[in-house]
Length: 442
Image (cartoon, rainbow, N blue to C red):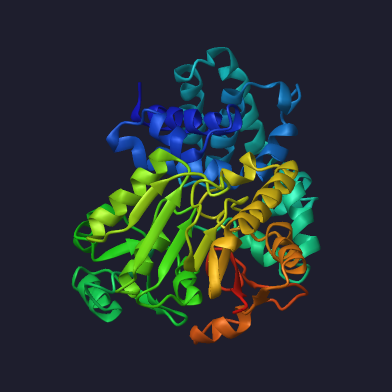
């Protein structure tokens, strides 16, 4: 068994786990069984196959004698991994074909090896015509599901193509300096000594974007708790929340704890930070991150929608990092293109509204609630907040005035509806939505 075939087989297993059972790529890569020396290649192949897979699927449909849907998840994954290598990869074409065919045997699809070989070789001969056919639709050109393309064109007609292009980019690694331990400039200097080039972000003063991604576990500053990984757009939650010393703060849906940790780093002297999450395993990740950074919070396991979870409590600041479609972070998680469906959006929006309705009564008069998603869909963002505002007379939207605390913030699309939308490809960050709501003091 060649190392090349083993790497391809691990990538195929990971991709098949997304296409078939619908698991996340993070989980399937962990279970794929790649040897340490093959892990980097298998990960790159799996990410690439899913990132460009909607275009490559259309190519494969032009190569197959039987419908795509009739193929096993492993055969689908073999085709995507093989086609990705031929169209986007660095391996010589003959090696890409031979190792993918060999991988078919390793993943239990020996009977399909001949068909995989024939499809990949035919693609080499008919590449231009097959790609032209795939690119007849915007979904094919952009390698995104058709439902999402339609939604983006409806919500952001002027920016849709930029958002789609950004979804296929390799995301940068962005660090957040631990304000309790060192300045952003000091972190940049420490990294520069190690030959790591960074650049600051004007509207996120603790953020540094690395010129080249690396394994963050190799950074002494990360291991020692002097920095964390967090996109610049995600770092806006804390300044928009505007918490002050002596206040009680609730971070609902807090896992894995990035925003909670940032809050503790940048706002010393809080009376209490309650970091709540419904999943015990994810709550454990909050504790792990707090421990690495030398921070303390009241981490609780509970459902924010259950009235008993926080009954009788009152907070001056509430952060709702609401579960969402994740359509703003596709460049980091290309499996979202395959795992999300049009029919998911309605139930997600209903839950998001329920979170607002459930947690608003816990906000003290004069307090502020910040609603956050990493979605770019208005159904989960402005529509949810607008509906809540219409039903809640004591709630005032103050996003624009709160954003004055973020000098250097790039202009965002000012379409009808409340909130601030940072779009991938437009702001140069992941896609995030923020709405700042204050409760009128009695």
